Image (tube, rainbow, N blue to C red; front, side):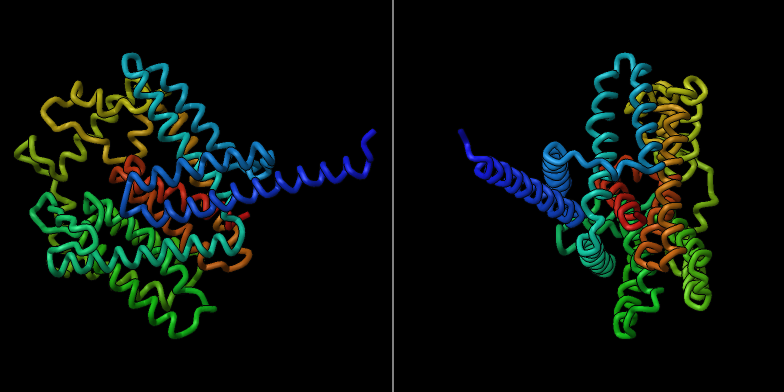
Length: 413
């Protein structure tokens, strides 16, 4: 007969081994998230590898230790509703049902899991700080690289070509394929940096260094000629002004930025072009075409307002509504969600985003955490930009959004 004490020792050994595997899985998830943050501007393949590894080891960790307390929040409920209504929209996909399933599983569900595992894994102060540090350091490197590209026409790190706006301006792209994507990425980095810059706890020398980096990245964002990012930045400053009451710092910055929009050569023309809607050639993309594409989205919405045309089908149906324009994304993420997945999916997504941001705002009011303020403002600005562009349909920018929303939620707990 086995000794009770030896039984106890075996049980303890098994528990110790299990805890070791849980810790290993947890550490792998942590560093995979760091890797994904690092590679956002650089490599889609690397992002996918790190994200898949993070999800795999996150699932292992939860199988070994089923702890799901982090799911108990209103934001997670809205996120679940968004996934459910998006799944229901697939019943309208008809011949595109496989595409709908790929969009559901390989895109929106993957993004939702990224949010959840960031919320659960990076809630630790040290891990959160590490993630912010990696995001900022590489963001500054990318911003400087873009600035050099603007001066020389050569992108040093990845030899990426300059972009061209619809009125012929050479636009900075940095490592991104499109100048609007570069603007959206910088928008998040700059807003986060300004939030930190507003803190009273920052040493004077660090404030000076941070101010220099902010100025350099702002110039890069201006020379990316991404008007959505400019508007998003203005809204980010207004939100930070309302929450922090740092009038002496934010109002001059906001005023200078608005003046640059209307007086800086090139930028001035790009700003004025926003109000020009005439388009003599329907085969060439220009500002008026964005409104034509929105018209296509509204026609799809009128036909299927509740469950949409089917997840992932917008571009497949596009030419049936507007055959004389090159097939486009909706250039308005919210209209595209509505057109593809219906009003219930859109409302659920907006409720999710709003609940996460309100969690962050309420936490900031309690503890004056300016890193959190910067994150909240950056995500608000990102959503403003998404009203005019395809941010949530870009792999790199989507990963950036869901990672940062997870960081807001982790910090607000």
